[in-house]
Length: 367
Image (cartoon, rainbow, N blue to C red; front, side, top):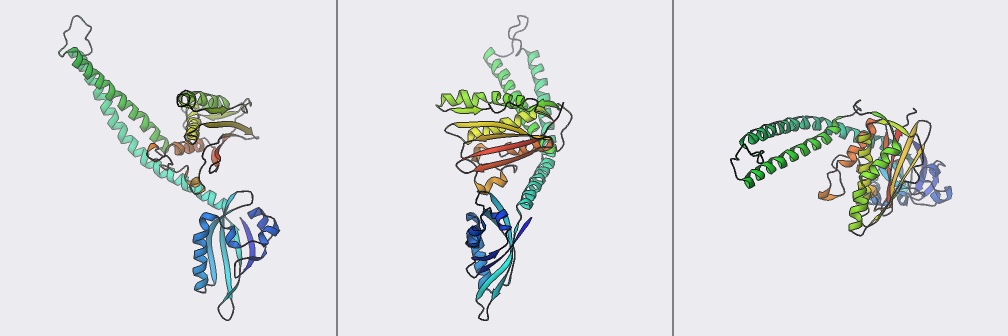
């Protein structure tokens, strides 16, 4: 954390400020000393902070403690700050000066957000584990009885309409209707089992050994692109839309990570689908990768509508969605859970109206 010592006049214009301000605000020293404290407060936070200060000064308060707000730096970065200050008044109780400290708490807030996300996933995981167990029992009963029903109906002739040695008990049309209905129920039950399997992912905090191998990350990306092709190419073309997938920058070889390739593929597919949703009129999705001695970072960028600043911190929260009734709010939570289970990190850079980049950092495995 970085502390900035400052003084300001009664209009909250800086009269002196610690050189550390240049690291926090990313302004030049001249820019900050000639600016009002309130102007540094992020626009969405400014109204309530200014109102709070007005009330404080109106009651002749002396100490301002722990007022938190955001600021937008010269480079466009959003940082979280905390203000602690002392207000000085003259003999007429008029404000003449404030002196205090502005503390950069950005890293602390990031840590708190990560802990909050983990806590939410842990809570959801415990709930999901119990619910999934009960649903699996119910689905097992349904599928078991469907199997018995199919055998018994076969004995009565419904499934043996083409056998010459048995006469059906019902007309062929009714028999086919019953048979098709049973098939529909069975498919629905098996689909339900798949959904339960997805819910159970929330209760897994450590990767199991099942299906975990050393896999080439680039191969998984290319497979995910191929899996989603019907949506970004075939269906899009029927609507007169064009999506361009740029993966020319993935010219690395030997980018191996240790995971279940099916799960990692699901991560990439979810992100691609989110990018398509963010570009309803078409656009481009670009992949790139970079490495260091211990990790590989896969970046997936789109030029869609982007994410508003006030909801960035909620993207990975379970059940949070920007898609209204068309979204479950589980996709990015699943993505977050999978990446974390394999020792990775995931983050988002986004600007409203300009697009989004998702960064996935995974431990690099040397074969």
